[in-house]
Amino acid sequence: MIHLGVIGTGWITHQFVEAAHATKSYQLVAVYSRRLSSAQEFGARYGEVEYATDLTTFFGLAHMDTVYIASPNGLHFEQAKQAILAGKNIIVEKPAFSTPAEMDEIIELANQQRVFFFEAARNIHEESYKKIAEFLPVKDHIIGANFTYMKYSSRYDAVLDGQEPNIFSPRFSGGSIMDLGIYPLYAAMGWFGMPESMHYFARKIATEVDGIGTTILRYDLFDVTIQQGKIADSYLPSEIYLDNGTLVMSGINAFDAAEFHDRNQKEIVKLDLTAKENPMVEEAADFAKVIQHPEDKMQGALYQEWVELSRNVNKVIYHMRQEAGIEFAADKKE
Image 1 (cartoon, one colour):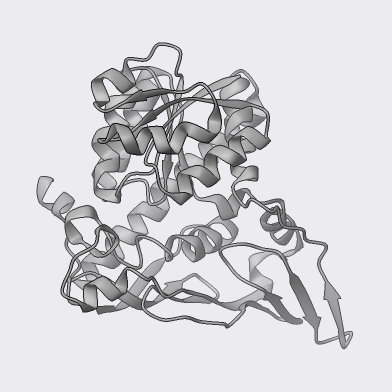
Image 2: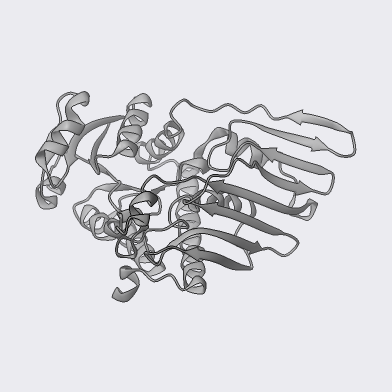
C-alpha cells in the first residue's frame, strides 16, 4: 500500500485522492496546509489522517512515502525538492515546474535519491489516449492536426476587477499555457514526438501572463495547431488529418469519443473508447505500478518515457513563453 500525503486542499486534490483510493493501491495518511482548519476540513472525509501546518513536520512523517503536490505552480519546485530530500516519491500536478533548470534539477535529484517523480498530466495515461496512439498510422501518413481546449476561468473575473489570482500571476507561474495548454501539448508530443520548431502567438492579460494563445508545432511533414485559453470557451472538437481521412476527437484533455471519417471507404468508423467517471484514476494506477514494482523493466521503461516527455514539454513551454515575452518570478532565479 502506498502511503500518500497531499499538499493542496482544493477540488483537484480531492479528485486525485478519490482516484488513488479507487485503485486500492493508496491510502491517504497526511494533509499539509498552512491553516490547520483547512487541512482538517479536507481530511475529514478520509478517516484517520495526520495534519501538518509546516513542511518540515509534514515531510518528516516516516510512514508517508509519496506526496501529491497541488499547490500554486510557483511553489512546486521548492516543495518537490524538500520532499525528495526527505526520501519521498513525488506526484506533481501539472505544470510540474516553471523552467527547464528546475525540471532538470528535480529529475537528477530524484534519480540520486532513488525515488520517483511523476508529472500529473492525466490525459496521456487514459486507455483511450493509448487506443488513439495505436490507431494512428506512421507519421508519413499524417498531414496535420488541430487541437483546441479553451475554458473560461471564473478567476478571470478577479483579474477584470484589478486583482491577481495565483493562476493568472507571474509570481506563481500562472497563465493559460501553464494550465489548459499542457493537455494539447502532452497529446501532440506524446503521439508525434518533439517538434522541430515551435511558435506561440499569445494574448496577454492585465497581469502580464497569457489569457489565450495559438501554438504551431512544426514537424518534418506536418504542423500541429493548438488553440488554448482561459478567458473564453470553445466547443470545437480536435482533429488529426490523415492522407485518407480525418480523425475527430471530442476533446484533447480527455478522450471519451473519437471517430474516423474514412475518405476512401466513404464511411465513419467509431473508435471503441471509454472514459472513467474520475479522469484521474488511470494516472494514479499507472504511478502505483511503478512505485510498487520498481524492479519491473517494462514499468521502468514507461517511467523513463514519462519523465522525458515531461522534460520535453517543459522545454517547449519555456521556449514559447520566451517568444511571447512572458516572464515569471522563477525565471529571475536562474
